[in-house]
Image (cartoon, rainbow, N blue to C red; front, side):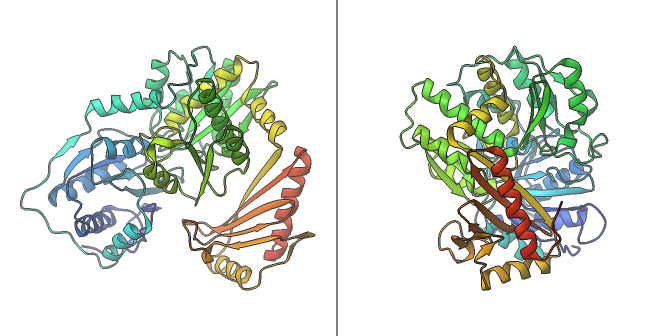
Length: 507
């Protein structure tokens, strides 16, 4: 077996496709699969696996190759017959009681990329211990032994597809809202979301408008610079259709349909909701609908990543619901669901990931799209858009400006900066005194990680290196009674950090 010089982490592997040992190809896919099987065997995890793929180039061939290797090693395989979403894979692992799941996906990365994403037997992304064991086998190109009796490769039963759609509806069945009168535009951005989104819309009697030239899965993503629904550029074609149809709301899912982007018509103009805004709207809607349905919220909880909007805590307090903060990555939200499934209500990340049901252990843009439309229809009855809802939340709890930035830097420069902060913590950022300096590396709880949090009386700043790219991630949250003042504070904090980094101030 050829050498594979890729690194396997909790998100699996995401890399450019090509012929070398540092790129994804049949040889590296084979090495990764053998390393995964060795890990499963080491942990005595024997049974079935489920394999799916998204719309990226070579995903079909990679998934078939992976299935053949698993079958040769004695594992029965449920292999998708067409493109499927990441949350559907998570659901399948649980529904089919598999020992693991594999999805060929690179989320919303550019077209040159593909990926190999692994889910544990709970349907959640694997933890660090599992990933390190896979990497140890991968590093030495260890091959799993073929079985005397080969496994069987079979399609995912249609009943599982149908049951998944049922779960999308069941997760918010307490909120009886008719969405059929909404004017909606949807685009899957050449990804996998169209088939199941259309099934959901049809079942809800919603006659949506679809962006025709982006509906078919296409790994070249020919009509978009980058298929990321967090960015307004990705909505260009949908926006043209929305204006022609006078749509009230535009929904976009990323290529593997785990992230959702939302644009709303407000005062004659389409506005893009940030991931935080959408999360807050969905949270507020769900909790208010639960209250109206007289649901008992005692012991119930919501989960968010620590870098997601702090306003969620105010909303949860208002409804008497516990809020749990976890590290970045939806697997940590999945872990909390696994600990207490019966009391879980909702989880979200600022990057466009949401989950209300317990059918999966990863973010689900199919379900989130349906909830967003329920929220839009619910508030439309009150004469409000989702932008009005956000503004109402700001008026009630105070305006929070969640200001996120990503800086491209050499890995060595990122490491040096983090070390410098730790060894000599600053007392001020600009003119603001730092009242809290929290090095998460020194924690002894579940939040231990390579993160630094700094808090002044005016704002909070979280700094962390990206786990997949040579970038430094910044999350600034500033709260004020007035929006412009909060924004000004957040921007000032960002400029102060640039000065600390020795980088030029941005205009």
